[in-house]
Amino acid sequence: MSPSLPRYRSADWDEPVVLELGRPGRRGIYAPQVEDDVAADVDALLPPGVRRTTPPALPELSEFEVQRHYNHLSQMTLGMMGINLFGTCTMKYNPRVNERVVARPELAEVHPQQDPSTLQGILEIVHAFEGILQELSGMDRFVFQPGGGADAAYTHACITRAYHASRGELARRTEVITTIQTHPCSPATAAAAGFDVVTLPLGPDGYPTLESLKAAVSDRTAALMVGNPDDMGVYNPEMKEWVRIVHEAGGLCFYDHANFNGVMSRIRARELGFDACMYMLHKTFAGPKGGGGPAVGAYGCQPELVPFLPRPLVDLHDGVYGLDEGDERSIGRVREYWGNVPVVVKAYSWVRALGAEGIRQAADLSVIANNYMETRLLQIRGVSKSHPHLTQHRLEMTRYSLEQVHADTGIDVHDIQNRMVDFGVDAPWLAHEPWLIPEPITPEAGETWSKEDIDTWIDVLAEVVREAYEDPETVRTAPHNHAIAQVQAGGVDDPERWATTWRAHVRKRASA
Image (cartoon, rainbow, N blue to C red; front, side):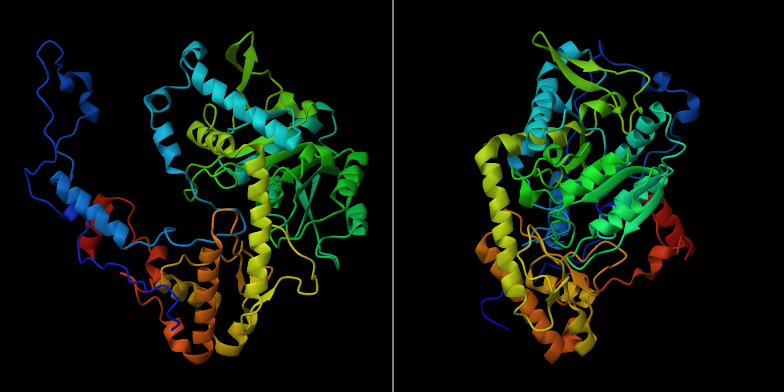
């Protein structure tokens, strides 16, 4: 192994789960006795049917025992704390100061059903951030309710349905056009909204031809839903003409901006003619992504679609912020209240910290880093890129294939993932299913990672590929430097074994 590669080994604490630790009577803190004048009979506040008959099965530990236990767990989990070039959607560093900001009581301890006069600070931030996205996109209004990119795509599918229904054309406009390299959420959400999906195949330049689009467009076309650049990093320079063709047929055009990082400040969706677009606040705008957790797919549209937006929207009149609840044309809420406001605040903080020049520089760094990575990755034995006949530079990411490594050695991308984490870097992201490229990996640096970090990650991949050819068993049996080796996933499908609560775990363990 090269001496320049990270020497990593995770801690391995032989420790029970927290519910099996501690002793009866042990406490981290004792709550003070409540004064007599504010004390209440708690039992009297609860109907008999909901009162506990036995105490909850909670662990009883001191504060230090709790802290030590969770420190041990964190030491045994790599979990996106190494060098992480997570691709197909930009993942980047989440500034810790933003966690402090959203934990302040002015945000954490208010409720969206308060009178708007008591929420002026939060509403001002939401309104100001909407203005920033309007500037970046050219769109007229934005809503932050959608809980991620797929939610935003579904929002557009529902707005498309409402728009054509308002014109008396919904019965005829039954088709949504997309491409095989568009994110799967676009065809999936269009189908969920009741549309038939027309998927365009690729042409010789890595994107569908104009002729294939013209053949698909008709008076049945309800919308075009595409991403550009796509998840291979290929940019379609004919997109303005695509939009014109769909508009001439009476359809709407939706721009999935999941891959916005490399074109920030360079492309405005409205200037390409799009009717609506979406941004990932939990990725592009440095909000944390929690695996379906604190996500926001900011959805924006041009004036003709504004009446159909989910409500409420934040408005400003005579210096006072208020909530516009809309009318019966709105498609209704797609999530509770205003959406995930803490992520909006974090995104606002990130944009204000960078400013216009910083956003442009971040995009430039993303493109430079991607092309630097491509140059180095393609020097590794057995690594190729999607559409290898396309030699021009790509934007913020490229999808690579380890098909040749697999053919030569029998080692697949999952084995390579498992071995790479032995060096303390995070495993590469593969691709959305179904795979369009055999044995894929899709690294993406964005503007977060330094050249040294990128070099280290690539050096680790090169070392693992070398091992695949020279010592495949080491790769096949990885990871070796972690608290847990390969996980046997069979039990995940067995309802007699898995449990989502401690009570169920105890019951199933006893019966086993």
